[in-house]
Image (cartoon, rainbow, N blue to C red; front, side):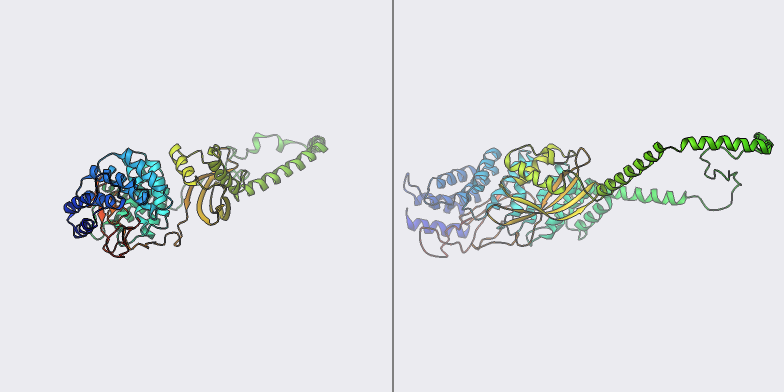
Length: 498
């Protein structure tokens, strides 16, 4: 490798002369020479020039240099180049391979690229899983974008309640690079889909309050419909209040003193209609004796036994009913959650532990989020139990150590006796979302909820200039890139680990 050309090529890359940089990086190499760092930086320059096919070839050549390493960063960059030229199937393969590189310091970048490529292929459930993985990656300094995109996936999957939770969590993690107005607009869509018109109107108003953010056609239509629903409900309430009967005196009503509610449909008979008032004293005595005999015949042991048994059944039913209202069931909430975790990680059928109301895509999203946990142990640490719904806080202890907390919503299973999981959301703690940036690089500005693809200019990942669309990718240049294996200069512009 020609070291003089290499230094000049890096200087041209820093100054923004990408055409000269690409040419000089190519001139650095001897014919047939394998030089991973040279091809990596050459691919970055080609991405800046919009020559995505050439950039893909450069990254592929860099991957042939086993001594250079950085497979995760190279595969991510190649996936972005493939996605930029519209080959989403190939991009999915590259991004997926990048996530399997255990030495890759920033896998969330690969997950974001993978999720956007999957959306292009209309694989919404798989895209949601990838966005979730990007959001919970501890190296991700700005998870709000991934969380908002996860909310978009939930809306498309017909799960507006889960979408609301994703958007609200995204608002908790908004960074200076995120646009909270866009997240509020997405939250308005989710509220509208969930039938929460008042909340939808409030969210859309927050999104447009400064007059800068403009709702798209779908958001505007949802906003108008939500306002109309709110107005209609107010009108219905006003009509009901106006139609309420006024108190006053009306015509006297005939009331049977022996049947004041009128349940029998008749009034007390007139004395002339019955023979009771014409009976003699002796006749009344005889009548009383006959009725006494009849009452004595009915006083037998069987009736007493029946009454005792009936009371016992009523008491038992009352106890069971009380237990049912307090959330008892078989299987219990703990058994349903533990059984789901065991079934997913042993490859067994998990449907018996999932709500029958869920779609196949929704079930797939839940089971996918639990895959790979191995022999983890789930423990319910908090439970808000109701008669038909329960909310549980679950700590999942990994075999290798460490605990992950989930918020689980359960409903009664198809037999209405036991419990089944309806939704499962990771509890995003602040420790899990702490930004990790030991290389000094910054998050790409294009990696936001607009769906655009980004590529860092250091030797980690790059993307073309931001255009605001999913088909573009931008490349950030770090001015203080750490030197690679070529030399020991700490600020000579060699690529950092992505």
